[in-house]
Image (cartoon, rainbow, N blue to C red; front, side, top):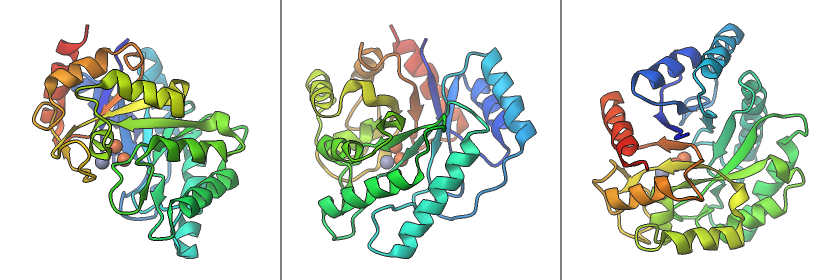
Length: 276
Ligand code: FE
Ligand code: FE
Ligand code: ZN
């Protein structure tokens, strides 16, 4: 099964997202749990969540991916910002139990000059404080472009975080194709080598989702500017290899390209046409 979707607005609830996804040829989607630059989340409507769960089951939808707000930084030097991250994690993980089996993706964080080791330590402490054995949600570390003081631009850093998490069966990784390109992993010319490296360092069994984005910038640029599929430095041929690769093809793919719904519909149709 080819699970393909895109980032959708959550303002009208889960069922509306499911219906929008279906209308553009998607069978999964990603959404922000709250304003990406803000704090307070809208209350979950349990009836809406239930209606979505039934809708998704009837249509064989893939797992949905919740994205944490960008303001969540578990490795900030400011204890108030770390407390905010803790509050968001706990609240989001509770809310996600209304849609059991969802995944929760977050940017590991920015160490803001404290150094990557301190960052990794603070991130894993946060995860140990919020993960619960009974939660059904798998929490994903996103591979980052390595801009500024971002943690997670190297596979080794993701491995180190997971190694320090007690409930590591709740942990996985979401690979963002734009970010790994910008971080210096050559998914265009040497996808096999990148995946072998990922397997050796993190383990392919940890890879749970793909953010499928082209990049405005060349390999190793450490920038993080997403481009439409085929219009950037990754290119259509590389995406054809990515979505068909035996190690990736059964994972859910989520577009985060600069598009409105009609653009997403076009890219979903394009990727389906490239699927073997
Ligand atoms: Fe992200
Ligand atoms: Fe992403
Ligand atoms: Zn990005």
